[in-house]
Image 1: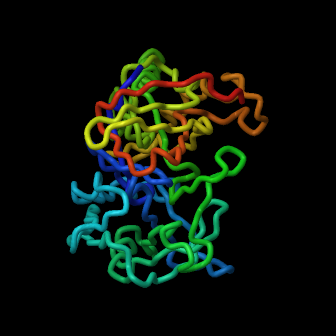
Image 2: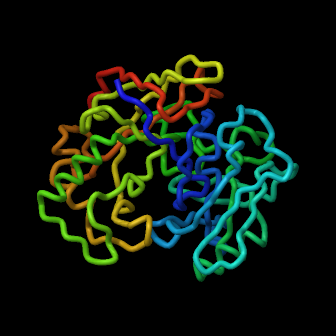
Length: 331
């Protein structure tokens, strides 16, 4: 048994997350999570605008979106309050950007590309483009995910999850799956190993302990041992308040990590190779006994989750009790 110790929504891909006390579940993850992403304003030879992330532009970590508290836990299907907006600030940008939460009656369609998905999003207009262009120093635009709520409005608006792991599910602009979960126990073990190895940060890199924000999970679980998430096949969350009941989330794939966690979210500076380097000493696929060939040298932290149909529309809250069904799939 564990509990939800933190819930984080990332409205704009690669930008700062919002730690919230409650969040509503949709078929594509937490409401508002990765609803928007930054893309290059210059299209490629196919006319598509490619996504931009911390991997290329670490300063995106310093962009701060905020949402009205009422929007984060509003019932699914409810319209945002009149005039409700996402406010976006960034270093050096004198005027905050305001992005309406209400979906436009007619989308300004933009062909976009994120990883291997080529589809259509909504362009948030010139003010948003000017904001991100000025901040990043190259032509950029902000696009919104349309998804199943806009099916029929344009072709290719629904981005499916990888059918090899989660057929029949939808993901917005997260890398691959709707929800990422990690445990406090795993992070504590990483910090303990760094301390044991004599990790000495080079300023402006922070001293230990490193925070969970480096790994950018949506859900953080407290009250479990280190790496118990490797065994989880299903999370059953006892929902407090509202209609109560239980939320079921399925663990569909261990999360292999790139080097985004080496970026300090407080400064956008890369802190050498850590914590990635220490993870390579004990969290490679080969060390975990995974038989999937392409995972041999991949490094794993966290689990990717999808939402079961009966859980769509329910609200998760910090403090909710969580039970775990095992065993996880043998990879």
